[in-house]
Length: 156
Image (cartoon, rainbow, N blue to C red; front, side, top):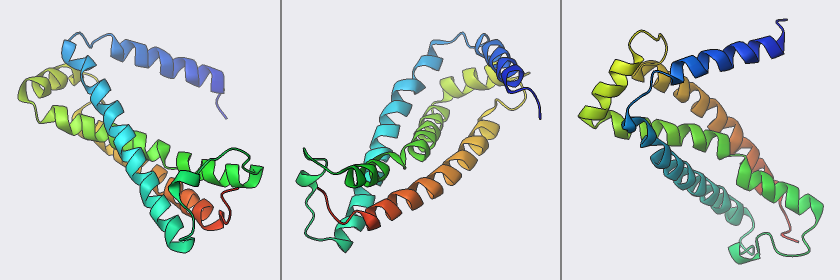
């Protein structure tokens, strides 16, 4: 098993080296769009899980969610309902931001030029990596969130 600290240092060093090539102002623009897309996707996924929950427990109202005096069991289950889809939503939001800026021709040219000479950092490679992370994280996150929604019998 390789030394984890050394592996992390090597990864960080390579990431800093790759980041040094990014000189364009275009590189800052995907960040707020990715953040906004992440929040939107995360909220939509939570609402989907909440719809699943209310299909099982129709007497539960959204206004009663995370009220004062909630039991630890209910808090943990509701926490899982809310936060389990988050990693997948982050990956999906980053993918959406990448696609949005790939559609803008001047940005695409700059990103492609900055990725030249750095294997694995092009649009296709990045999107494939994000897609794999998104599929795995969304599958696991939604499974955990739906299981928590199923077992959350009381909002107190």
